[in-house]
Image 1 (cartoon, chains in turn cyan, red):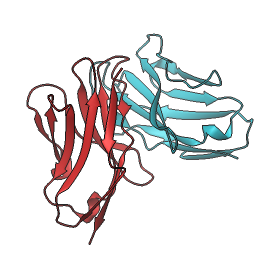
Image 2: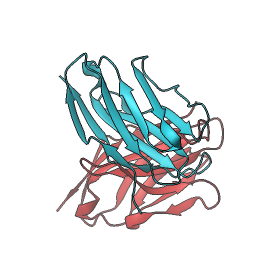
Image 3: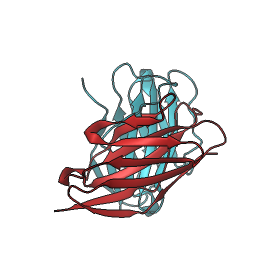
Image 4: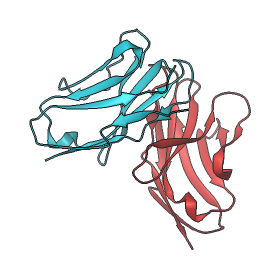
Length: 114
Length: 114
């Protein structure tokens, strides 16, 4: 079946602009995670969604970052007023439920802030 | 909080030689451990996982890892390296909080020489 998909695959934006990154999880997966991969920080957790529960936003680096998940499926990560330090690969992963430890990752969105 | 340390950011082996990538973890509760592989410009692919039960776990592409609680280690091995094994490898841990949010090591870049 289809895996996790992310769009766009690459995004170049100017400093100060807002960007939206999209994630389509595997159908039927109720848990969804966003991670960020950058040269300086490695792979770091950003946010976790489980079904209709309130998301765990504890990994978001600043209030410029927000995310939503509509209808328990597609998720959008929004970065407002982008800064150069936001340049990274943003990875989305999904798993069947909150207690299934196997996460399936999408190919990522490479964000470059100029 | 849990953490992961990968010893050696770069490992180089000859084709046909043993691959050994080291991972040590820190966790106050029983951990669940994973190895992921990342090929250039791709997302993360799960190689293998330890949750409960047998401490020697086998994964895809001939890799295996052994969970050693006394040594807080989860080293990844493969008896004979293949050119296609060249990639970056990440060790990760979860303790089941925030769903299964993963804490990753810094990664080890594996080079396989002909």
